[in-house]
Image (tube, rainbow, N blue to C red; front, side, top):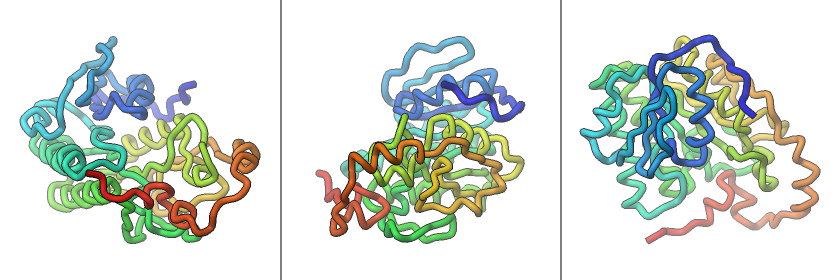
Length: 273
């Protein structure tokens, strides 16, 4: 079910990168309601363009292609890139070079706001008995988390130097429902994801902002008090799933790194070759 539109604002043309991924496919019909034209891109094959859509198959490592992709765009929702722990070469091309190409293209094409899909894995080596906020130091749990920390720093450079605003969404676990006890603290419903993205696009001034992408869960690793200026108000909660998940996972191993650290199983992942 789609959330009710959270704003009367409308954009002439929005760009959604990573539109073939799980969250991209979910956001595609939702963002279409907020713009006259939704431009969609991915390295993978996309469903054909519908009414009010433009589809571009593109590798973000192609600098000229990315510059063309941002022509005539009012704002970008950037989900493109690798979203799991992968060998360094894959992460380098998609998440490092690709992110640079996107921001440089935004500078050249006059795009003034980007909603950047960062990740909770930027903070993965904080402990689960700690609460972090937007000013807590990054502690990535792998190369993927490291690449997202780079993306946040890149975004801050382009804000400080070129005035391109970014909201970095440290997305927790966005699925139809939480899958385990950790996700009771990190879950983000699809409706709240929509609310978060629209708030990030429509807030009058964001500069360089970090917000944790979570629903209104009673327990959380993340404190969003420093992102209140965005106007994001989640309406869903993982609590409705709590009894079922705790019955399925009654005991956790306290010595398991996935239990100790916020990044969960990502902290166990060794080098991938």
